[in-house]
Amino acid sequence: MTISELLATTNESPLEAAIAVQLQTVKERETKGGKPFLEWTVADSTGNITLKVWNNHPQFQAAADMDPETLVHLSGEWTQNQYGIDGKGWKFRYLSEEEKTDFLAGDPETRERQNTDWADILELIRKTNDPRLKAICDEFVAQFEDRFRRTAAARKNHHARRGGLVEHVAQMMRSAVAICGVYPYLNRDLMVAGVLFHDCGKLWENTYPESGFNQLHLMHGEMLGHIPLGMELVNKLWRELSLDQWKDMEPTNEEVRLHLLHLIASHHGQYDFGSPTLPRTPEAHALHYVDNLDAKLEMVKDAYATANETVPGIYERRFPLPAPLVTPLAAVAGDHSEEAEETPGEVSDQLF
Image 1 (cartoon, one colour):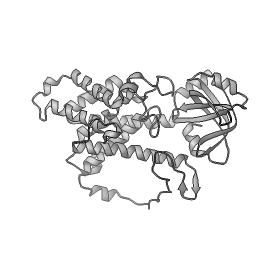
Image 2: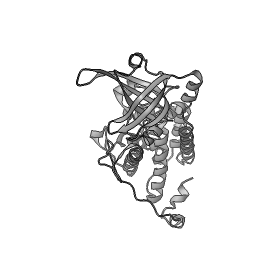
Image 3: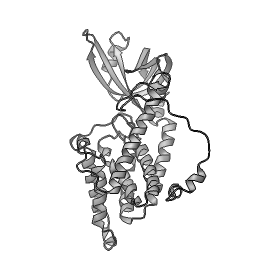
Image 4: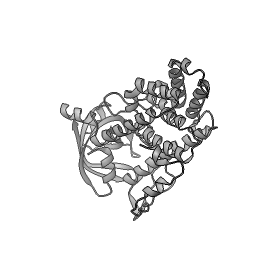
């Protein structure tokens, strides 16, 4: 069983299950009564959870002495409440060498989904018409594919898992292309490139080691953040391009570079959310909302999978969503293909 499956299936009724995880952090805490306990943060390819190890746990001292990044097998009875996952009678052991190999490969479902998303990203880059934007996208992929594919989109809240950035970027690209079919004045090539690069600084803020699911905290990410890092990376890659062959093109090379940088700088949409500037072009506004939409819907999906129903049809609120969710309305089965063919801008022709 994976962490995401555990979160999706546990509730107030105990579930007996076993999971393989990598220990991320061990923190010593005290109850109000002064009794010591531990907080274990553990992760796999699908996500992470925090477990409490109480001082009466038979393996308490072994848990306190365990080093981060250790791979362990957990088994016991699990429940879930508003405070998270709780284990009853659970115990742990070290993974065998064979189990370590299987664990580090990641679960098959996540690998398949991320491989499909990566193929979509490459296909949309291939269809880019502006040679400057295609060249910088190709160079980014050539230099950073491996690191990109093991980076998370965030440390928590959405796509906070190894490879989560690939999932986030692919879904944003598909959304951006669909929107360009509805709003044909948007620069599709700039939107695709902007989506690819908007979070590229997270390769130094939310990445993972080559083997493991313990998200790294690197000095550049801590001190600068992903927006300045992303702008610096684009400028570095731009300087490495052979731009002379396009010196007579319109729009100019410098205009293209400036607009791409603006998408990175403004994608948070507000100064108090970390953007050094505000959206000032149609593409910047569209990119900001596509980014926000994908993050929010991922959080909604996760909330439905993990939150308990307080009463039938109403779920516990999951931070940072603004309110408790209710059961969504089921769609009536039918075929919308004829309507899609009549949509202005021929949206379907813009997709794969």
